[in-house]
Length: 142
Image (cartoon, rainbow, N blue to C red; front, side, top):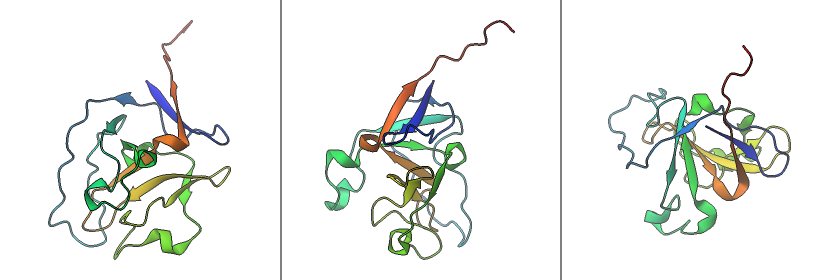
């Protein structure tokens, strides 16, 4: 199990998650406006995307954009970016302008929310800005 934490202040940014093998995420089509729909990642798990986020467009092709994809319901202590330009999208944020999620404690840019009507409904935590805290939380003494 893994908990993702802010690199800057050690705040937890996710629930305890199990890693799943990477599989290409399904493309969203035909979702109604103003609805988030289901996430492409099951709740309680995460996947490491081997391709830098945005690499297909050539704009964000860099190691600094490697991400862990989580279900938005598994995110904790995440808040929208204070710069409204980072929250671009027609219905909700589409993630096209880079990091749009911040650590609620220290304000560090830690992730990208994709939740617009034409995008997936996921959170991508930026691996260079988070720490993977491997946990083995077996019940002891209960």
